[in-house]
Length: 165
Image (tube, rainbow, N blue to C red; front, side, top):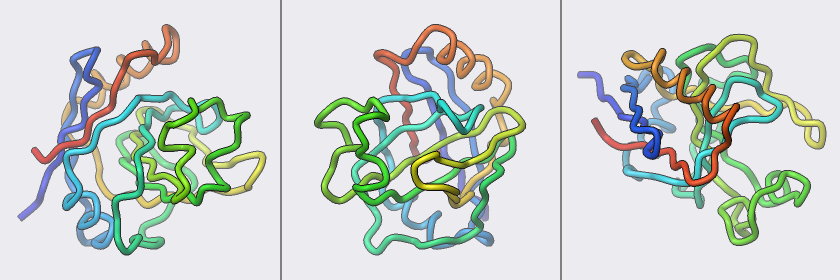
């Protein structure tokens, strides 16, 4: 039986529902499901394009490793990234001191993609593959509208929450 999660932009009061892709990414689905709920500051991507994400302290033990990876996510993809400290803590990225981005253990990035033509590449590190572990099945147009509002008006005070549905 399929399992679902709810993903919310809390300040904007917008949510969507995503189905876990347990056949394609079983380790990642298990790691995320077992750690829910998770919530953190929302960010809109600078380089990847149509992405909203949060950075969290690592929660998977062991890390799921690569499964169902992509560097070209499509609208509705929900993606897990595990970053080492050296990959994410660069001060030029603009994350506040004390945030998950500056943790000694690195950071976990949970992201949603709401539009087309995304490319996961970082000028410092090269390709940044992520594990597609869920697909949004309800509420994508509303999340896309809220994500565009994040891009145009800023993310300050917004949180992105992942919870069991």
